Amino acid sequence: MSLKDIKHITLVLSGKGGVGKSSVTTQLALSLSLQGHSVGVLDVDLTGPSIPRFFGIENSKVTQAPGGWLPVPIHEGQSNEEQANGHGKTLGKLSCMSLGFLLANRGDAVVWRGPKKTAMVRQFLSDVQWGPLDYLLIDTPPGTSDEHISLVETLLKSATPEQLAGAVVVTTPQAISVSDVKKEINFCKKTNVRVLGVIENMAGFVCPNCSECTNIFSKGGGQVMAQEFDVPFLGSIPIDPMFIRLIEEGKRPRYPEGTIIEGQDMQANNSTD
Ligand code: ADP
Image 1: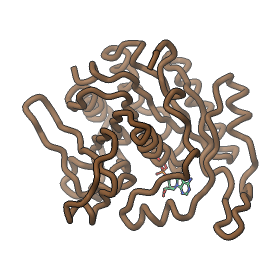
Image 2: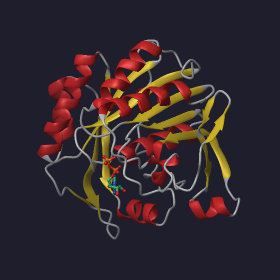
Image 3: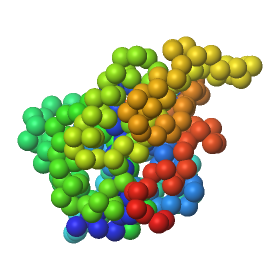
Image 4: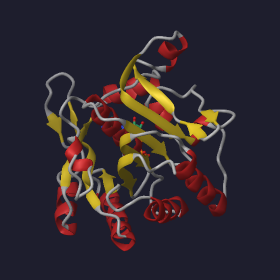
C-alpha cells in the first residue's frame, strides 16, 4: 500500500474556488520541505489541477514504474525554463502527483462523472509510490463533492488514525466565503476528520511602497469563524501582487518568511514527531 510509509496526511479544503487553497497547499509544502521534512503533494482537484503550475513544473511527466506511478520530484529553482536547461538544486525531499501530469494537453477539460472521479481518487491513493514521507498534503476541489467523499472514505480505510492528521480549511475574509467554509467544517465533523485549523488568505493588501496593510474586506472573519466552531485559527496571509506575477512567469513564488505555520501544527494529535 503506497500510504504505509507516510507519517502525517493532511487535507486542504475550501468552501469555494479561488480563495487560494492550491496556493496555500504549495506554500505549506515548500515551508515544510525547507524545514527539512520530506513532503508529498497530491492534487485531487481533478477538474482544475493547478498544483503543477504553482510549483512551476507544468511540463513534467510522471513515470510509470512496475509498482505504480513515481511522483514528480521538485527541485529548488526548477521553474519550467530552468528545468529545460537542466538547472536546479534539490529541496528537502518534495514530490508531487497531479492529474495535470497525465493529461495529453495541458488545457484539456476533464469532464468526468462521479464513478470515474472516485476511481481516480482511489488509484491516486493506492498507486503512487511516494516512499517514506513526513507529510502528504492533499489539495482537494472546492466544496464537498464526490472527490471529497471518496477521498475520506478511502483514507479512513487505508490510513491509520495516527496517520490521518486532519484538514486545514482555507478561507478569505468575505462573508460568503466564510459561510461556505462553515460547510467544510461541518463535513469534517460528519466524516470524523479533525479540523487542524483555519487559514485566512488574501486578508488585506500590503502596499509595496509603504508596507502598510489595507483591509480591503472585513477583517477577522476567519478568526471569528474559528472561535465559533472551536477550531484553531492558524493565521492570515495578505494579498501579494508579486505572488501572481511569479506564477504567470512560470516561476515558483513563496509567501514571505514566517507567514506560514510551523510543522507541528500539521501533525496528528497523538504524534510525537
Ligand atoms: P483555489 O485553489 O482556492 O481555487 P488558487 O490557489 O488557485 O485558489 O488561487 C487563486 C488565484 O489567487 C491564483 O491566481 C493565485 O495566484 C492567487 N492568490 C492566492 N493567494 C494569493 C495571495 N496571498 N496573494 C496574491 N495572490 C494570491
